[in-house]
View 1: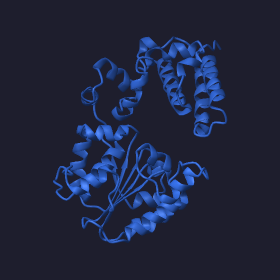
View 2 (view 1 turned 180 degrees about the vertical axis):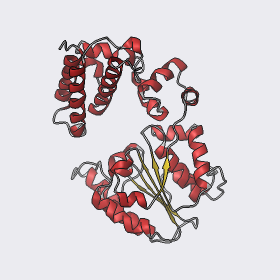
View 3 (view 1 turned 135 degrees about the horizontal axis):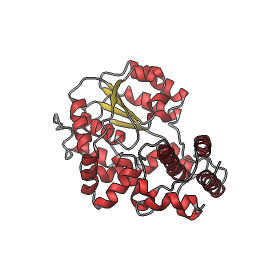
Length: 336
C-alpha cells in the first residue's frame, strides 16, 4: 500500500474532505487542482473521481462500500482512466498497460518520467467509449505538468469537446508549466493550505508523536502530506545544518539526490533569512550556525538552482552528493 493509500485508508484529511464537498456542489466537466506540493492534490482528485463514479454518492463524497468504490480501490475500474508518468504509476500501485509493462519487463526501456503521448491517445479513445457501469467516466491526470507539448495537444480537443458522460480532473503542483490552452479549458481550484494546528492534529492522528510531528511539519514548510515523508529523518533534521557545515557527507546516507538538494535549498533559504533578520522557516533558529555571508550564500543559492536542472539525471549520484556538500560547506564557512 502506497503512502497516499495509507492516508486514504485512515480517512481523508479534514481540509481534503471540505474541498471535496465544495467542488462536488459545483458544475463543470474539467477541474484543475493547483497549489504547492504536500497539500493533497492527488488525494482530492481521487476523492472527486470516487464520488463521480460512486453508486451511492452523497454531497460529502463517495460511499466507500459499493462495487464502484471497491473497483477503484483495487485499481480495476473500467470507467476510470489514470494518466500518470509510469514511474508515478508504479509508485502508487496503478497497473501499466500490457504493452508498457512488457517493454519495461523486457528491459527495452525504463519507466517514463513523463506522461507518454501513447497513453494520452488511449485516454482520448477511452473518453469516446460508452460507460461500462452506467455512472459516466472519469480521467485523472497527475502530475499534470508532466505532460509534454505533444501529450498536452493530444488532450486539448477532448478536453474542449468531451463526450457527454466524461469528466476530467488535472492535479499539479506546477500549474505555471501547463499550456495556457490546457488551463483555459479547466475550472481552476487553488488548494487550501491548512493552518498549523489542524495540520499537527492530523499528523498526530496518523500515529506520529507530537514532538516528531512538529519537526516534520517544519521541515516540510507547513505542508502536512509532505511532512509524512520526513518521518525517517525527523531525528536527524535539527543537527543537519551543523553536519553540513563540517562537510559530513554521511548525514545524507541513503538519500536520493532530489532529497539532498531539497534539504540544502531549505538550509540556504533559512540562512539567507537569518542574515536578513527574518525568521527561518524550515529549521529552528537555535539549530542554525551563525555562519556565511551574503555573497557566499547567494552564490550557493544560484548553484543549487542550477543543480535542480539535472537532479533527475545525475551522471554519478555519489559524486553529485560530494559536490553538493562541498559547495554547502564552502558557503557556510566563507569569510569574505
